[in-house]
Length: 353
Image (cartoon, rainbow, N blue to C red; front, side, top):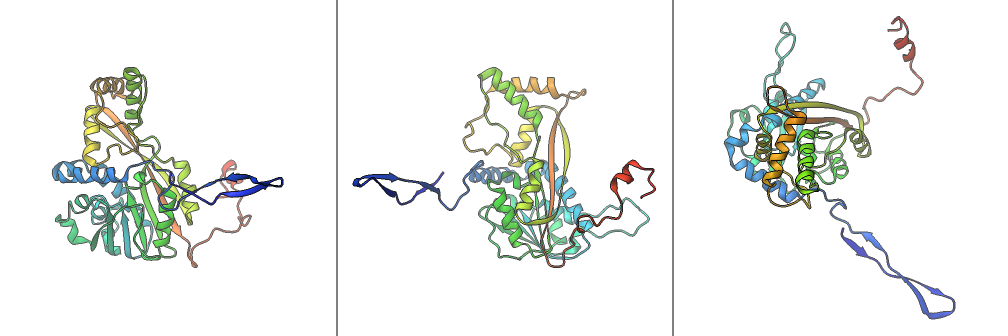
């Protein structure tokens, strides 16, 4: 913690000027947030190293591509055009790629729906890792969307003026942010009135199988537990954070994606290739000891293994939607203005429907 010491407060005791009570106090210095959980520089270097192996990096993009697709589908429910959209923490522009994919309508009798990218005039992809941001700059999807790639120093500090964007999207990036309340307030600031913010983050019980296996293995082999999996936000806190940042008409939902791996070593190799390795401050440096890894593999199989011998890994996704307040924004009806008693509908014969 950075502490700035103020002037000593002097108060006399009795009538003796030499007998003075000197009291000093400390206040939080402005600047970086008080609580630093992640080393942002380490996370940037991890992404840079991962992106340099282009082929492997693309192979492990299955999670980011799937989440980006599920996130962008939510834009189909908003019937408007978006002149300027910000993709915050763009990674390898997975959101941009998802926006250019054809929209599959479950009803084949209806006319085809054009890609969501046709509703955007410009997409600004902001990312702190240059190698990851420009990894797929030559792929064909770039021709189907007007995309502007911007390398920013840190996703925690937005270099944009107020009321710049018509929508802000973020997919699998905000779970590495130290000061999430501050960033959400900045996102609200750069949005135009009555415009949405949509994000998907890893949270809750993500990788609980790996977490518990490593903890039990370390406890058995070393007699203690190290921080091997990053702490994540809980879904119960997300709504409050959005509301505190000034967002209205909130929607928060949870979705689990379970991926099967042949071994826990394959899972950890994929996490490293994604640039999603541990970046917690104060973490134990160096690799995990061999005996701990072997014990963790055995525990993983015993506690969580599938019948076919594979190991499941759960990624819990928290999706959030919030709207910046605007003058013409829809408002909830006044309390007590309802004409139908919900209790009668749920407990009755359904005649109130």
